[in-house]
Length: 115
Image (cartoon, rainbow, N blue to C red; front, side, top):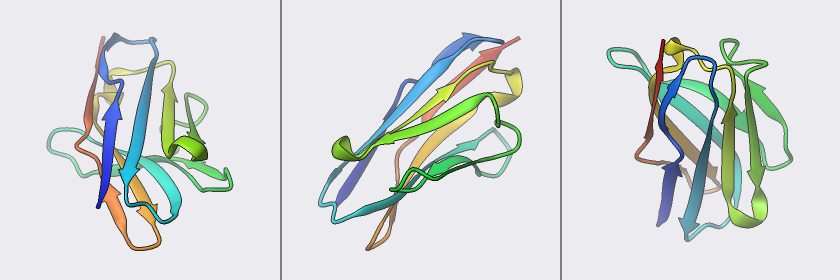
């Protein structure tokens, strides 16, 4: 059993910053990729950024140069630093953890950016 818990969401004005955290715990044999997704009301869930165990990152075009993903393998934790936030970044942000045996989602953390 793997638990994934996100934190750090909130309300921020446009142009502001937030840092999301996601911690995985439980029976974890080996975590491979850790990723952030987001889902706005009425829209599909899309990947925002991902990072492999070796530190290789990838980003959605809409967040490149504004968001930075990083991870601490010793703590099974991934972070998402979000700068220059825009109202269109408003969404429920989910963490997804990929392990050898399967992938696991967190419950999500709300990010709201006011104009």
